[in-house]
Amino acid sequence: MSASGRTSSSVDMLRLEYPRRATDLVTNVPANNESVDLPNPPAWIRQMAGMYRQPQHDLLQYQRLLGGAYDRSSAQIQTIECNYDALTDAIRYLYQQAQADQSASQDWIQTELIQVANAAHDFTTDVWQEMAIHAEDIPRANHYQAVQLTRLDDALALLQSANHHRNQQQAAFQSNVENWAARQEHTTTQLAVEQRRLATELVATQADLQRTPQQGAEGGSGNRPPPALPRGPPVAGSASPSEAGRTVPGDPETLEQLIARTVATAVAGVHAAAPQGAPRAQGEAILTARFKMRDPGEFDSKTKSNFRSWWRMVEAYFRCYSNTLDAQCIAWVGSLLTNEAREWHLA
Image (tube, rainbow, N blue to C red):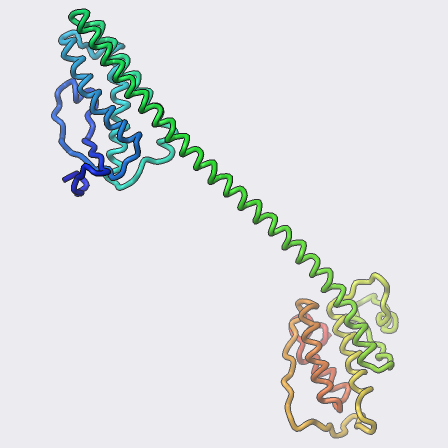
């Protein structure tokens, strides 16, 4: 049973023992015998685990060969132990990640993996060269050199595997970046297309709004010109009502002016189409239909586009009640205005 509580298996499973640093190894500190199982580890982790198990034996063999001459304060032995500890720290990192059911991070693979492989290579080179130097005889020295070549092959295999895995990770990361950039470019293009479409619709709507009052005046009054009303609320220093009622080319029309002109046109058109003899005097009886038509609702004066559809409903309402007096039509339309439109109407 592993430290994580899972049953070990020889199939697609790698058992990692808790690593011992060089100080614990050469001073004979007992191991804690803890281990953890890694399911389906990649090739480079298997190679690194093998590279760690073998250097433990190599370092102890080197210590026994030197005996009392194994001086941990010497620069050569400190370098050997430092490279061994680099491999130990890597195994400890993988051990801790496995305990947490996590894989090695991409940052660690990109920055640490190659350094660990290089440290394993340097450890193998230094240890077996030193053992060949301190060999008892030439045959033993030749044996140590042959072992060194075998160990170096293993170290080079780990280095190649680490490089291959890191390159795969870099390629996958680059692919993700390129895909993200392509999606961003597509989104930007779609936004530009949508902006152009909205701009085109806005121009068409503005042109339609400018044509609508003129069409209403021509079709609703039956060749009868509408009464001359001011185009907007009077303000200090403004032109006379007769001058304000005229359209000046290029003069922008406010929403209030559009309402005033459209109301005047519609009232004139409704009354022009009324039957002969319909009452027009103040106080006379008003004839209404037996059914009740739904009123068009209030107008909040926020946009001209909303006013256009609302006014069509007002015109339909006027046609249904054609005998209504002018003053009542105007007062009724004013009661439907809200916000700024109502303030202008009551001014």
